[in-house]
Image (tube, rainbow over all chains, first blue to last red):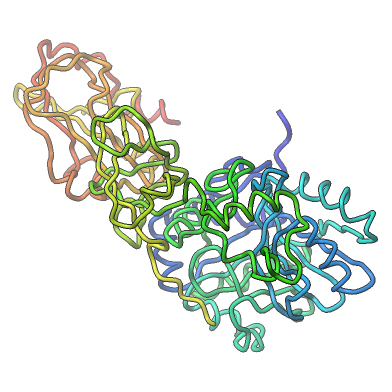
Length: 375
Length: 119
């Protein structure tokens, strides 16, 4: 068994009573003494602090931001070059079949591009970029001496502005570099909860002190992976390796909005990324299956892997659940999964097989809880 | 009160055995969001999975500790699964069992032995 890596804030997590579990090669807090439900609710009502330092932080440098951006466009179907300085955008790497290799955030930081990728994919992502981008003159630099924290919730702005007043002026998906207590922080107004908030890259040496300072504010609670998952599920956000993977195209996954018109057929810089033909086909004809929200009609949660059927007794499985559980804010079970396009209309009644019993579940619009972004 | 290695508690009430889960089990499970209880009248054998309990994290089963017949179930925890976390040893009992052989109960751990068992 490979040794689990420890986060820079490991001691803080154990001191706070975090229950540590293996996740993507790291020892991570799944919950603190408050528990998943209380942590979830606290984040929706006040502010939660998440340690997401396991995620990959990468800088791409070339002659200019635009050079790095145009090179990266050979791997992602996103308008990278057109992103304004100080702005961030969601994107993904695709494979030759149009499937998703990973999803990511990328930012225009003036003379370079900053990117955050998933922990479980980061080694593969960096190798993928080095192989494709270095021959194009792009330097791919993994940042390994910074922690990444997320402060999420309606009170996140007030909490963080006490230490860095300028964050109040940021809009959703703005990025900025700010000094907090002498440490250079890379801040974006974004997150993975559906709430307003920030993601903050902090030098490892300053991370413990910074996290303690935020936690000293009584509006802030530490939040583990358990509530991170229930928050993102209610917000309708995909979890890589579950709701999206190498066998899922962005169009099937409902991520077409992230492929700007300029990169689609007929745009100024169409295609040019792996799987562009397949994705163009899905865009044109519509995908055969779609990711949908699902609301079990009863109280029993329907979790990942639950088979979906069109009828209570029909034999043919039509789809399956890729994420599911109890939604603390919704107050009921919620799920996401894939179904054939003709069953994707909200309100369609399907059946999920739980412990050998078929239980009714309705296709529902996403997100389950409204987004509270500061646009 | 007696305790099983499956983290259930058993309390003898006249000729019935009341069954619930321990504080330790409820803490380990986390916030309980769903409980499915057996039907009254069900004949069960020791080890049968007769209750489904789901927390925010995962689903698990509760087994019949001994042979017997379900004579009463606690519908209150179906309506309010959170009671299992709030009062696992009291209000959040799961079912009452009419046991064929009451001597069976004696083989389970007492409180001290259970405390040692969970460390």
